[in-house]
Amino acid sequence: MRNLAKITSVGVFLALSALCAFCQAPAGQDAGPRGHWSGNVDLPNRQLGVEIDLDKPGSEWIGTIAIPAQNASAIPLDKIAFADGKWSFRIGGVPGDPVLTGTLAADGKSFNGDFAAVGGSFPFKLTRSGEAKIEAKKANPRLGESFVGNWEGALQVPGATLHLNMKLSNMPEGASAQITSVDQGNAQIPVNSVEQKGTRLVLKVNMIGGEYSGEINADGTDVTGNWTQSGNTMPLVFKKTK
Image (cartoon, rainbow, N blue to C red; front, top):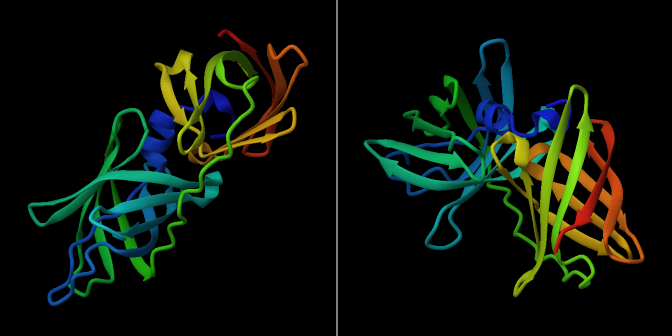
């Protein structure tokens, strides 16, 4: 994605570019898909490199995917399941529920499969290259009351205007943020990090390698700042609605 106009292209971009890993435990082992996986998905015009981590620290599997070429990292994986000799899971929070399904090779070091998304199915191959590297999710410090609420903004990009809704909340576990892209089917864009630095708000969106930094005004009605993604910086003002 070269600008936020493709932010969901999250539906297409991540449906084509975000991948996951699946594998079956080799005979005599109980590792399942646990570990760090590296490889490519074969798109129509190129190979897309991905890094996937899967682990089971408790009763449930957890996982993340990174797409280095897009500066996207820590995208959550969910619905990890084993059926008919294959592992499958989806990219969490991505429109179209993109899913990858595959089978572990006999030596347990690699596995092949298909990534199914809106627009088709694409082959992938991953290689196990070490231990899982999933960072524990950190709680965001609570926000000041002037930031809490619903906000609306419009991002001007070449050839289009993207209307965005932002919801900022203080949950029991800490601050929470959600961005909705209205013009792209109300696509929900999860925010990984929420930080208040005095009158400044900083949001990080790992799924698309984006960041927003803005300053709230004295009346608490506007947050004026910039959206940065893939080396591009665009002005973005959010106005409080309630």
